[in-house]
Amino acid sequence: MFTGLIEHLGDVERVEPRDDGSVLSIRCALGALRDGESIAVDGACLTVTAHDETGFSADISQETLARTTLGTLSRGEVVHLERSLRVGDRMGGHFVTGHVDGLATVTKVEVCGEARRVTLEVDESCAPYVASKGSVALNGVSLTVNEVQARRFQVMLVPYTRENTKFHALQEGTVLNLETDVLAKYVRRMFGQLGDTVSRDGSPFPDVQSEGVQGEGVTRELLEKHGYAS
Image (cartoon, rainbow, N blue to C red; front, side, top):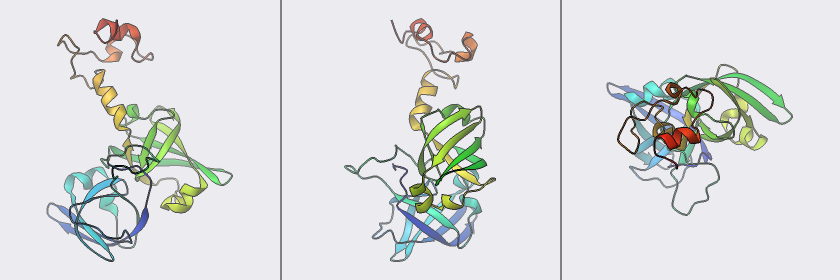
């Protein structure tokens, strides 16, 4: 578990392709590491397999290569790094699992004084989990969603974020790893949007749209009908 607050910027030292994925070696100053600990690399949770005073290495599976931008990394590129959350740490961002849901493509970057308003587009499978004033992690950075329109949403990059991440160079066409809020996933599944949940009486819980309430979302009437409210 992570917070979405980037601790360090690392440099890709080596990428070694293998039949079952690849090995990524990163040069960084994270301090004392342990084999087996988790580190979010551009938002993707990886397990340390080797380390020394100059950095660490981690295996990347084919699944991770297929779902994230890690497969496009090359020597010399900069990556966001965050070590896993410890019990008692301050929770400055939001709960980030390091499990990337999909990719988000930057479609516009607007200057707003020292800040930047960034518009991104996501795949249809991810769009329902992005909500206005909710949270997302982009390349591991916790950000608040300002506005949502269909498959597009906007976030604001304040000066501190731009100065302390590689987002200072963000431009149109950049592809980022997207993790939506884990709470949104459970809520959507609970109310049958995935079509395979059941209500309290054991019957299939319907898709909201099939109930003829498209545009209204989950209503009290719908909850009462299926035993979730009285």
